[in-house]
Image (cartoon, rainbow, N blue to C red):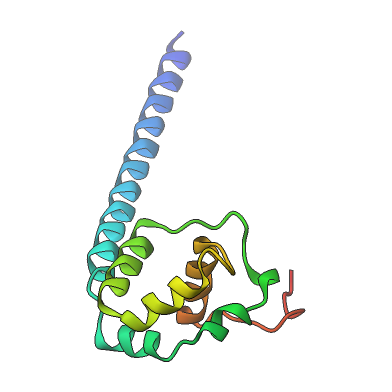
Length: 128
């Protein structure tokens, strides 16, 4: 009976330690997300200059095979997109000319965030 008691105590302790670690990690991720959202609302002159350099062809020529059908904007991206559209008439005009006639809004923003991050790769270069 004594061994079971200590084993049970050890399990509860380990369970609490794991839960504490999960809670701490969740707080860190949550804090970083909040910080990302706050930063994303601050559209810099570099963001605007980048957007001013985009063309409708940037979006229409982008290989659709590189898009993820399950992609959704995270809150920080959504906040950035909204703020950028408020301050950048050029990007607003491109989006208006393309969505929804030529592409879905989700495709437009997915392409934007791929291009802005520089995560483009040539078709067939996927090593998976």
